[in-house]
Image (tube, rainbow, N blue to C red):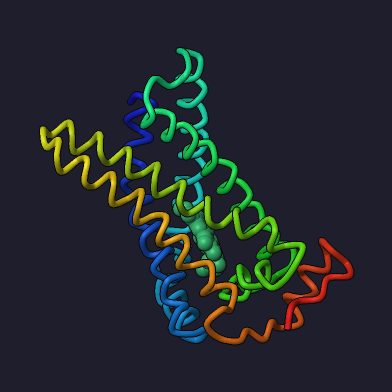
Length: 216
Ligand code: HEM
């Protein structure tokens, strides 16, 4: 199988996870308890011992194959259209985002033995200096993956001869992606309700910044 085909078929599986993952974050608008209940419901699927290693392997391979495709494309020359440029930049950004996301997840779960529920992302949005990094990190992380997927899906639909639908779907992913990213951030940052960050999460942040004090 060609690398490009692998990237495409593997993406189709990951898109299902992406949507349930983002749905969990969006559900946070109804409060922390709802977020954790939705996450626990979906965890029965993706934390299943038969599923989780496949998910982690699939996303890791997607990143590696994506990086190989990126290098191959850049070796052929600079991207020749705005869409091609966006595909390269969003893929590159998502690579960085996801590599760190998986590393931090491993640290939180395996090293700190924490339950990575609502309080994990909320902790890094609970005050400076973390917010200066994590606000753009989450915003562009979510937007970049949705823009990248949108451009890919456009090509799939175009191949089946539906040029107009392809353009609309791409636009929906790119514009919708920016809206979803902008929606999730204030939810997790506690703009709509108070978040009383448990001490274990303050200790987690103090491992990185010893004198950290969360807002409010
Ligand atoms: C605002 C953006 C995001 C936030 C706040 C976030 C937060 C989280 C949280 C809390 C977990 C732990 C889940 C659990 O313990 O059940 C997690 C795991 C994970 N996230 Fe994200 N995430 C974000 C974006 C993404 C994106 C765009 C992807 C791309 C597919 C992604 C992929 C993953 C994967 C693969 C896991 C591991 C699942 C597992 O095996 O437990 N995340 N993320």
